[in-house]
Amino acid sequence: MIELISDPAVWASFVTLTILEIVLGVDNIIFISITASRLPPEQRRRARLVGLSGALVLRILLLASIAWIVSLKEPFITLFDQPFSWRDVILLAGGLFLIWKASSEIFDEVEGEEHAQTGAAAGFGAVIVQIMILDLVFSLDSVITAVGIADHLEVMIAAVVVAILIMMVAAEPIAGFVEDHPSTKMLALAFLVMIGVALVADGFGVHFERGFIYAAMVFAGGVEALNLLRAKRRRTPKD
Image (cartoon, rainbow, N blue to C red; front, side):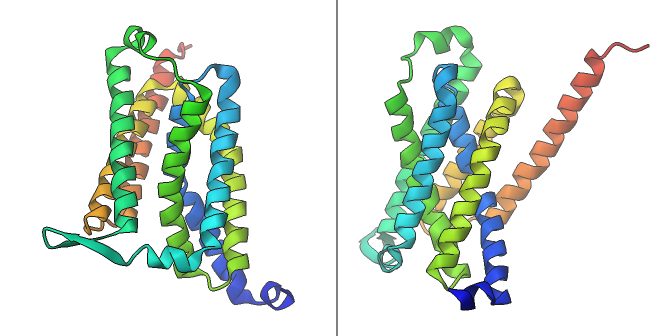
């Protein structure tokens, strides 16, 4: 352990992995925030904390089962000349679930508040189940990334713990901002649809470079920030 702490290469991999875990966790935070918004206000914070805690536990368990994670990438069936591994199946199921969930939320937003009120009220347990399903998918990609960057299990776990703690701190302000700005919420839901499509494509062996997806998210977020700034200035009375 002392050798790890005194090794600059270990610290470099720790910092790099922590940053990547935070970046990869943005879509997870957005999903958790939007899903938890279906709950009564007094339950939302607890749902976000439970959801992110579940993500932390899942990632640590997956990291502790690195050999099993590697085996998930081995094809076990071939359909129409396309080999599928268990990782592909998980990504396909998670991507389809994410597309369905985000599309349903977009439909509710477009239909308006009256339609949302007529729908079934979300229970705390149902919300947590939905969060945990996507936690598994996002954690799988996160752990595979961690295995590819760091060589030591201790470094991987430390980076994941730090990243999740930072995400827990950031989750509440992000959730509040998304909830207070309907156009931002619609943009976030569109991001989730895009990520779901990327997961489905990955499941079929077609890899979309995540950097392009996150670059598009940053660009669209910047445009939305300018729109919000313009709207705020227009509402501010001039002297």
